[in-house]
Image (cartoon, rainbow, N blue to C red; front, side, top):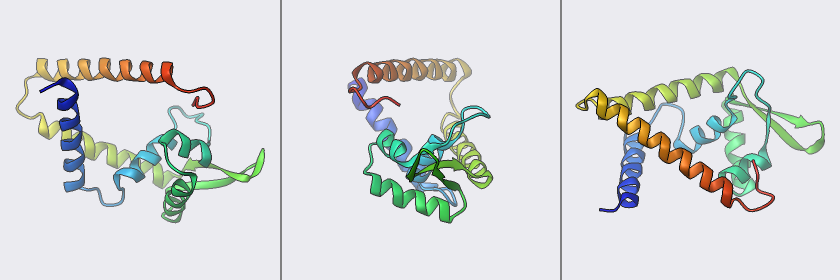
Length: 151
């Protein structure tokens, strides 16, 4: 099998595993949105709904419905954007941060369990190669991103 087919197979298997052992409160799409809102540092800036929809490749109305659901569940806070009264700035609530932390831990456990029979050098090599692949893909995406679609 080609590398791209093996990667597609691995990602599909991971998706099925995540679905089979779904977390209590977050679907995969919910988690994806919350991770985008999770601050990388304590001074993380709020995100606009439109920008989040664009970065995820979703229609703004689809993103709006997802965000409304997350806000109703107390995971996301929406505040009016002072620069544009029609837009909202989004941040994770403390409950949203905790939900992301729990889901990340759940995912780590699923992957760790899957690698249970692997020796340490193989695990380290897999991590190194996946990091290298991710860096290459992100660089390529940045080079090919159309004008006006910067994040």
